[in-house]
Amino acid sequence: MSKADAVDATTGAGTFDERAAKALTESMTVLDNRTFGDLRDEEFLVVTPTGSYRVDAIADTCDCPDALHRAPDEGCKHRLRVALARGERPIPGWADRSAIDEQLGQHLAASPRIATADGRTEVFEQ
Image (tube, rainbow, N blue to C red; front, side):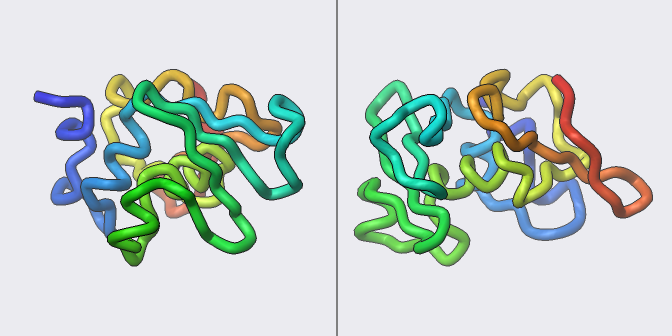
């Protein structure tokens, strides 16, 4: 079973598709202009084992092939990773914490957030 399978969209409320599961579980490092000086405000570099991609959070764009050629409604996994890492999109409370990439939010000032049973969110601590 892959780590993405451990964050199955069918086990909890709301929408959490395969791209979102990959964004949460695959090895990715998100850098902002504090850690990578060649970026503007609200622009991020997402470094993966297979390449690096620029995400513009204001324009909601990414320069990866998935975003450029398929343009998924919820965004590519890199855009989703930025949203998860910054706490803009909460991690579902039902997600298997051990499956979540340990690098999530490591290099950003903002913190990932996880949904709680009472409908609020809290800072995600791994």
